[in-house]
Image (tube, rainbow, N blue to C red; front, side):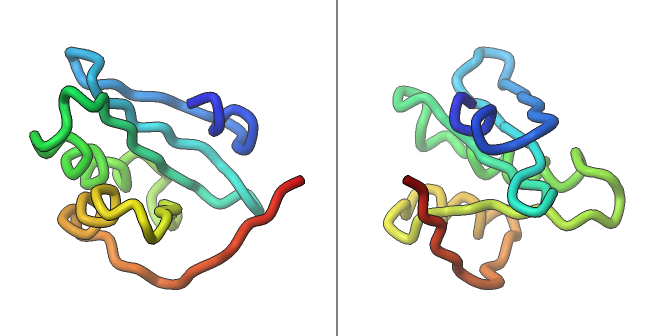
Length: 97
């Protein structure tokens, strides 16, 4: 969430009832809608990330594309987004100071 607040505008956050997972949504590069999902290590393996990734598209204005940036080495996140019906459409490299 802290990273989102530094790099996105209009950040909104949803959490699971037990606060073990977060969905963070905001507008990032060029105003595009971006989502991220975080799951507490003790709550992993229960499908929370997949459920949140599946719910995310309904949280942006109708017709607006939604993007998730997933590092190639983050296999758990890749699996969750793919299981939720997301598909890779490209790759980018962002550099900062």
